[in-house]
Amino acid sequence: MIAHWIQGFEPFWQEKQDADLWFLLHAQFQHARPFVHASMKVQAHAKPPLQETVLDEWAVWGNGMADLFAEEARQQLSLDFWNTWTAVKTHQSNTWSFGQALHKLFVQIGLRAQATSVANQVPVPAQVDASEALELDPGIVALSKCRVEDLPKHLQVDETQHVLHWLDTLTDQRFAVTWVSYHQLLVDYQWRLRPTVQGKRWVSRDPYAVNSYPQQVQLLGRFVQNMAKAIKAPLRTDQRRPSSLTLTFWSGCIRVSISEERLANIDNFYKVKATRLPISQIVRDMSDIPPGLMTE
Image (cartoon, rainbow, N blue to C red; front, side, top):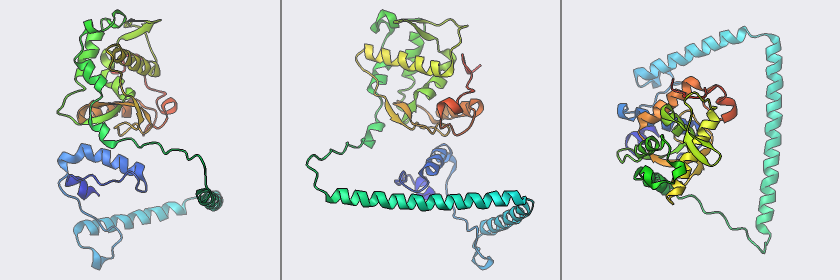
């Protein structure tokens, strides 16, 4: 698979077993692509006559030492641990058996339902066109060409010009178009974020006011969405997993052109500030994201 990536091919791996791990590997490979020129398969369990390279010999030696240390560690575990281990294995085995039986039942129900004539068939939803992600969000393109004077008065705050300039940097044709979440957009822009809302009127926020991380994500998203609606080019937000090594949850995303360096900087911010990685739950894993201007 990695050999194909090096040659420029992108095999369809999303439905492979352990697709989540393949996703992380593929995303990491994108950062390392300029430095990777070849791949080599290492035989980590081959007998000496079958070890073709020094790497094979090194891998086999490493596995042997790992097994030795693992066995030494096993000897130090208490009897209570092994009793608990046996109980867990029994529970897992029973759960697997019950799951297989339930799966078999669902298959039988499905086969019987398929054989049954139904008068009103439910239409199958159309699949999302994968090629759509190759085009910039029309709303972002429109905003990048927008002037402050083109917006309604309630959106003309001191920060509006800065927001429009920043949005223009998300349309750079030198970089690939990718799905980016509002969380990532906030981190990319947070060092100069000021707009907030009072009732229906947008104003420049007091620099000493403190907003929580979720509030800041919501404020930035609403401000940009309202600007796009005002010029009759609403953003096309879609629920997807964003292009990120740290954010693994599905979230509202839009299509922008952004460099891999900027995406990496965003990931690095979360690696330092997030409660745990990879981030799969906003409330739990982002609980320690600091409020206010988060780059300070």
